[in-house]
Amino acid sequence: MNNTAVIYDPIFLKHNHPGHPESASRLESILKKLTESGLTDNLIQLKPRPAILEEIKFCHTEDYVERVRNVCKSEKGFLDPDTYTTGYSYDAAIMAVGSLIELTNSIINGQVKNGFALLRPPGHHALKDRAMGFCIFGNVAIAAKSALKNNEIKKVAIVDIDVHHGNGTQALVKDNQNIMYISTHQFPFYPGTGSITEIGNGVTAGTLLNVPLIPGVGDDGFRNIYNEIIVPSLERYAPNLIFVSAGYDAHWDDPLASMGLTLTGYSWISKELVKISDKLCDSKIVFALEGGYNLEALSYGVINSLNALAGLDETIDPLGRSPYEEPDITGLIGELKKIHQIT
Image (cartoon, rainbow, N blue to C red; front, side):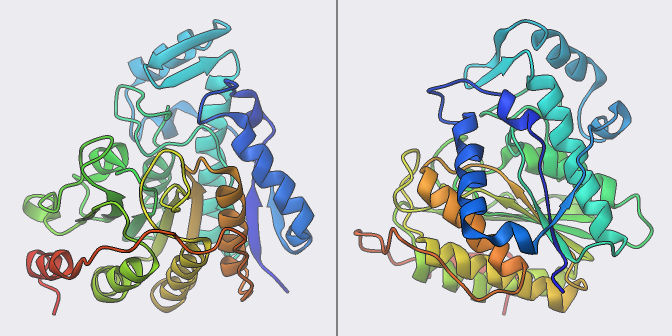
């Protein structure tokens, strides 16, 4: 019997600005393809819930939360040049946080094996006291800190597969030695953070693992990065729970980036992360939606990740291989091994 869960709420579709890259059409496309795939019949659908203020305050100031609430009272507004609001955006944002915590708790408590939170707005750019890059609250960072309140969870790892560096997540967890943050991202690129030297300080040294990639790195490069850098680092850290900030904008045909991953490559990454969760943390792994702006790549990317979570071998890749040649990243891998003392 399958024991993979999804969590979703219709309020996520009401946070919407037609024509904006991060619009409701992203999640609408995912839900449509998910229904067509028949996969929903094999998934447990958990009941979403809004976060309470005390949970959001794990990462954000009360003043900021109140500011978001007030801006969202008007029909339309902006929290930063990229991050719009509607009259529903505050409700969607607190539902995103609460639903991810709910899914995480269900996994920790053994109700379900693993799962995917189909959330909007995304969260990995949100900072302690301001919105950034389409993100209002730090969904994954908050859920990670919430998980550590459970006595069973001593250490958490966050693997960010979005093409943009999760500067918000990193800023919100970097002082906690019980959370490891790993990011593969195009660099230099928005938001400009995530250099190879950002590794943490003092007792947290080594808990940040940033893999800054030049444009064009695709399936072969990512396979080498995981085999030689990320998997050994996770094994050494030995988390009790893994979060995946699941952005699908490193796909070669995404309109907002210039990387070379295919849907097959994304599927392989999902399977590797599920496999390492089986080995290290009793299969406790939580995917949470971040970016991805080619609707076809995004939708099939999510389906492939759900297949991996459910233990199904199927990979759907109608878009095929990148037409661009991959650059050589042997030097980067060697440098990362030196910095992080990986043998």
